[in-house]
Image 1: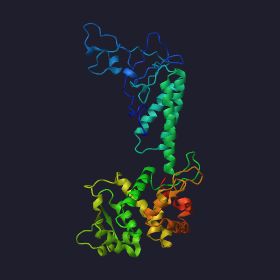
Image 2: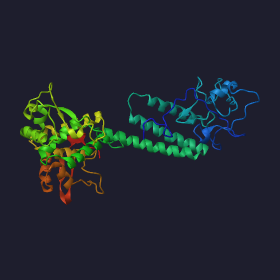
Image 3: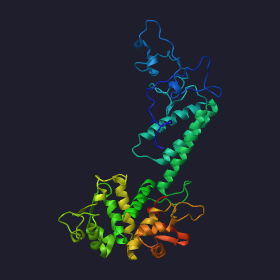
Length: 425
């Protein structure tokens, strides 16, 4: 679904200055319960068959009313002049909105003799509201969901009074769009779809969290060294260099990730060719680099000349890097002196949790299915039987509220304090 798209996949077009015709088959009366509605997006363009031009008359001599009805240059035939709408009290033609405008929603003209009047006015106002939404500088999914709700109700009534099945289908699509938009908004806010529960400001959107899981899986399969310390350094450096193949790091970054192992791990990554430092910079020099003069590191496998393992843009790259930094640098994990493997487990559990904090995709039971223990162990550079001990450390640090490893799966739930870091499965 694309916020602001038209009824048939196109973008909404302002109805100002656009023409239409109400002429139906001979003898057709007002559009009420017994009539059939003609729309501008009907097969064949929605125009009735045009009468032949009178003898000796040039197309350019068509009356102004025909040009207002949307006759373009080079048309094969010229429609007859549109009958003048019947006047309403005050001298305003029925359905006319002033200044040459006619009611329009999406690609459908609102018939100016549609009854009841309240439906005609609602459809007209709703079309204007969708076009106004398109002009907003920032999207508001709550507002968009309400517009789709209104459209579903209005089109259902329109289908009732006209008997047009396509309007009923359009109402059902609008109802589905409202539901999907509301779910998207709830996921962004971290609340239940019905609006219950506290509002949680999520660091990642659902799409960004999916990219985060893609990075974790890529690193699980392509880690250049087997140890947890190297795996953690590779994760953080990959997120710094994911777009251009290069990124800036400081000594504070490196020591914050790896404590006393930073120089050794950095040199090992350089030795195996996974990482390149500037020619005049050693691993020890990188550890002393300050924020005002960071070290520019290069990851050759991520350079633009190589096949691209990731498809996200620079905004998502920055958000993912910030998310991982929040996890790895968590205050309580630092206080518990959590090692590299425990921090990797914190990253993995955050990325593979639902909005309520439960780990893994929703399963048949209320507790969910959890995540496979072998996949967790492989990412964290652990043996499967060692995962339970590191999960207990996360429980002690209030990262996990609970955890167990029965049946070859890690089950559990994020603590409330880290729910903003959830991967929104």
